[in-house]
View 1 (cartoon, each protein chain N blue to C red):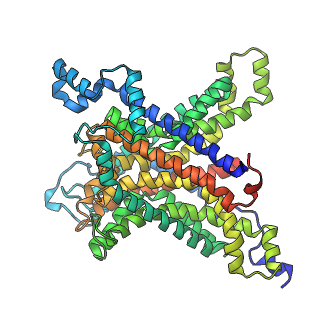
View 2: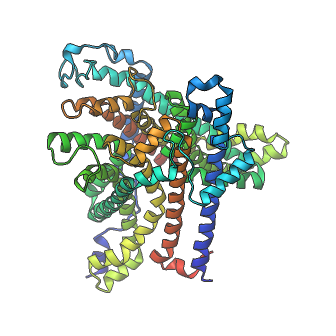
View 3: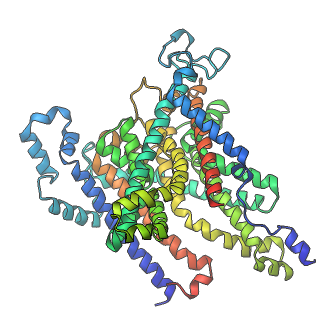
Length: 285
Length: 312
């Protein structure tokens, strides 16, 4: 056995990211899909002609077919248009949660990075405690305190995700704060709040955006999960998690009621995850 | 004191500090919603009955100074008293101990199955060329994107309602455990397998693997004795993530499979704003997290001989 055969079996190579997450094609496609999903969430009426709330008891439990691509539910409502209109609330929940998480995280991270040793220690120990709670359980505790509903779900999930962003922002801000242009601003007497907002923040935006796009997927799943538990918007509202919960009772004879909204979640999360990883691969290079 | 022991003790002390922080934060968050707590106990109709409100406040100790309430809370938690459920009018500890077994069963079996599947998938695909790598990456991507609660619904639709292989609900025996375990374990397995596979390939490209082959070591021995051990270290670091996913996922999966357990107890408590129950479950989860992390820290020197010599 020569050394060539020894090494050739598992050829020595740098561990690369998978092809799916590295190519320009994947970046463009996932970007387009995310844009399309954004359009659907903003203007559902462009994509579904029937209303999501029209009952049609005569055609209840129609399997997927030409007239109803995803079938109809127990009240004869068209599931396709409910999924399309549901995008509005489900995607918005995930986005609002992520925005809250990012804003809170930026605040925490910047205070830790610029506020001196004590502020840093305090924020870091706080995130230690924060991260000891599983995200969903922390969100559930917050909902128990502030009550259920779409907005509260988004607030709870955003709050639970904030320490992840906080740690990233702190780490990045510490690096950027040592850069010469920040030093120059400091020497020139620019107040800390101002140079932080004008010079530090824009330079750490890249990694934060990447984590936020990955986090949006997680947030959408978490929001749908909490609605599935019955803590989201009230029944007639089309929302993916609530639709899942609705369809659960009819799995024996009408599987499509619960399967369709779940597929929608999977498609959205796949799109934002692939987009996020492509951005990440690009920003590392 | 050996350095490894000192390291573990220090991490354990850090864990206790985190736990104390978790208890403190939970307590103050709950009391910040003070008046609401009495509303939660009495219901909205009692808003203008100050006498009754005062009586309830006295019964639950809500009229004492905050610091006294807080110290009382710490004291009773140290004695295993988790509080009193507003909604069920029962000690929280008794409520939890009645429901903890099915959840523990599910979480433990999902952890074992998820870990074993990850090792199998990683060993089967590591270093096998593009197709296997693509498959493993795809599995990981799907694991991230497919929520366990929806996977549970799909498994139910296929294996319970169409094929009728497994019961659709309840927690009676092994058959009822199979589908929820899979729903919980598959997403975790996909992610762990990806990490493990990359680490296996990395370890296999290191000089020690070459030298082991040169000594005539068989591929299987090399894998079990050397590369797998190397690759397991980063996976141990991920155990905290896996645990969080497992606990959060269990709540949802229990709901989907109508299993009794902490999940249904917790969701019910959240809906009725029964804060003693919710904060007890959350603190318990933090305790599990802290213990698991400390155990993982203690495992590093066992897995990695380099850490036995000098750890500071």
